[in-house]
Image 1 (cartoon, rainbow, N blue to C red):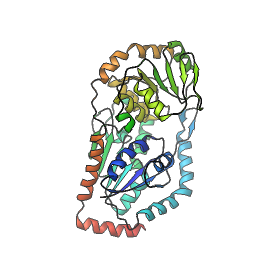
Image 2 (cartoon, helix red, strand yellow):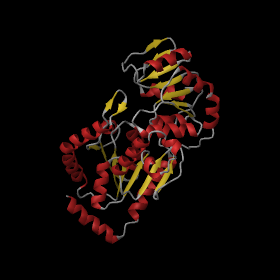
Image 3 (cartoon, helix red, strand yellow):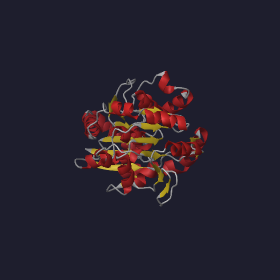
Image 4 (cartoon, rainbow, N blue to C red):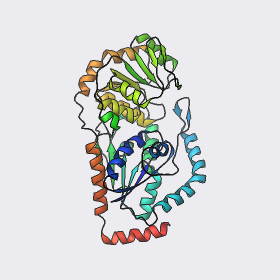
Length: 368
């Protein structure tokens, strides 16, 4: 099977899980990968071949996503970069004739799939916004953010024959052609043996109230993301650690609990390892609010707007309750998710009749 695989470059969650899927697919199939932003840099170091394409980015200010600045920024960049990027990846697959396109929230491969009438399968967590039903408690006061996020999500990879949604929570499915599967975690997490330590793993850019709460708790804290340097600095019970993939995995594996934002990747890893989470979603990013609220609903931790001394103390007092809930979470590695992606691609490719294949070839000539 010939597979064109597109990877969104915003953050690294798309890249880390896509590598797991692509490594498995490469054992049996011909796979060509295109990626943008951070995903291109990350995957280039780990896969035989990756081509770069344009991808959208977020405009940030004081830790909050600026909606209209984000739109304006991406429109400016798209005018200059998209035409060349489109020509480039069309040239990449010219004459190769992929059987199926897989997209982890990467829009340009979706454009190609629709134009060439190639089956498209979406593989990501963000389509949870659009493919499932979310009640008023989950949407909360951020209804406007939810509607904007859902509209953007629908526009990114629309027209897929199947949406494979990665998730550690299970709301009702609202739209057909949707399959919910467990998250894909990094191999280092999949093979890690969870141990119950005494420290908090903290991943945050930090603010004075948060630091004050951590200090007053007296709990040992291994802190990532606040100092940004290469040195290891200890200040009382706060242990500021430099960027280290191996060190981070070890500190997560042995943590008593985790304090972080609402990003899907780290929440998934914490749940997989049975670690209670105090999640503080990023303002203006509804997907993070959604993730954190479902985490709290399932009893795996707390969703908070900010971390005060009282919020942290309340979270720490309930750790055993969270641990009992997490003990009921079931996920056997990445096998189910990876198998579902491969089977979905094979099924979509095999379902095409001879007449449609002829139309696809003609459509590709028109695209070129």
